[in-house]
Length: 331
Image (cartoon, rainbow, N blue to C red; front, side):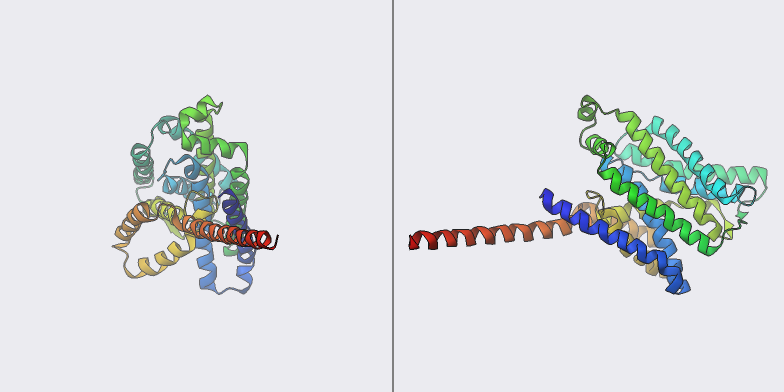
């Protein structure tokens, strides 16, 4: 079983890195629509990878993606044009890290539904806070984004953060920290007895992945001419990231990315035609995945590979027995 899983992971990661090389060249040969789709694809690949690095092994399902993405967006909205773009990205990462650390101290002792509800409420709290803040300070809601950041710069910046996150996820899976996260997901008490500093590991990785989500929001902000709190802290983004991860399968390090492309295509088709029932469809899809395909696409792929390996071994065993009977008959 372990050999099958390792072989599947090696093949999947090789395919991902090859795909990243193809995406690197997309602006040179792709149409404007294709490049725009690739921007969405890269942004969700980065968000899903960041979400999975923490929530996958620990099994703490976070719905705070929209909160940290929105923090990054509004850092660029307020500071863009006043300080360099890279400084905006750094401030967004630092602010998200600080917020996630405080939230982690307060909430990572919770588990199950309570943690999910709190992280979902964080996005709504920040949205309402920005609405109140802009209404009191500027007497209007919404801000124009004026950042000297071209579409090509945006594309390559997104490609860069996605590549860094993919490499980080690949290395994390094979590191001592990765083993500690999986141990926490299996049994926190046993992990603590084994010498893992459970609180420190959980808060550290949660805050680091929150920073990555904020960086994505900061990079994408110049793509919008006008930003509203409902856009930056859109709860749909949190649900989409979870669905993409579950569709691909969170039991495998490569699995979540398998759900990114099909669900993004579904979003492009469905939201453009039926925007109002879109959240209902997302909820229904999430329920179906939990009930009937908890392992996602990667789980089904592993099952297929495992059955093929079992059939191969059974055929080899039968062949060996037949050869043994023939040799004994000749003797």
